[in-house]
Amino acid sequence: MKLGVASAVVAAMVASAQAALVTSSPPRIGLLLALYNANVTTDWMTVAKAAQRIPVRAIIPVPGVTPPDPAWAPDYPHAAAYKRGVAMMRAAGVEVYAYTHTRNISRKCCTCCGNLTQFSGWLDKIQQAADFDGVMLDNLDTAWSSAQPYHPDGLSRMYAPAAAMVRGRGLGVWANGPHVAVNGSLEAPANTWRPYLELATMTTLFETGLSTWLAYPKDDLSAALHWPKGQLGGYVLDIPDNATAARPAITASLTAAIARGLTWMYPTVACKHGHGPHQGSCTYADLPSYWDELVSAVEALQ
Image 1 (cartoon, rainbow, N blue to C red):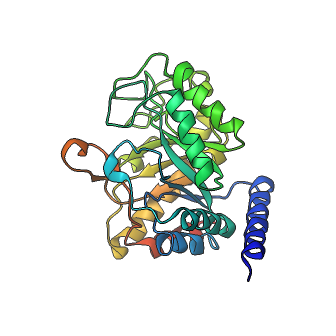
Image 2: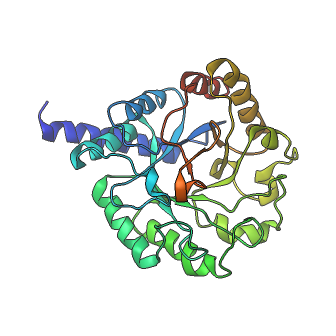
């Protein structure tokens, strides 16, 4: 097949997948995936294959967009291969989001953090690298939800302008935060959450261990926040890293998500920390060893 014809076919497949996303109702449960690698001929193809069976939203790193921990940065393929890899996943039905970090004004955390000028430059690099469904804004800190130091004007000075920049380029927004408390409490009324939730087409509300997640109150978080469940999700971080033990833990975490008014979940292994000055940062560079069980568990709950 000639290159021009192949490109047209991929473009048509992406357009079809996007139309389906717009017109279809949210799934009962979908898989979030922090895919912090650039393995276009292995992991990315595995994820694309899974998207034929289950709904998948994946975050990937982008060349030239500095991660909060430099150790996250993968070895990238050449630019054309990267762009084809993103197009391949999207054509298969994966919603693909570019990773960015928004703790730019709350604290000096690593080596990445700058300002809205830097963020605008990141968006340029993202759109040069590939056609994405959206941009993931990590670390939206608030006075009530974060144990980390926060900036009292973070919403007006960083998060809202950054989200507006993303939307202005025709891209969706995935916000990681604000987070609920470690015991599952919202810690603020729904109208206080609302300006943050309005920034994004999806918000992940927690990154917590399995036992902590299962001990959360049985409340419907969507109802409590007065926000659509199809726009809410979270990460469960310590699924056992072997297939036999993983399946019941995955199913328990997903079932709890459905009961608590969430649609998107990532049941993953314990956080893998970096080294030296970056030992406080989590990385999710590899697909879990129980990938097949994860896909099957999500599929069984549709």
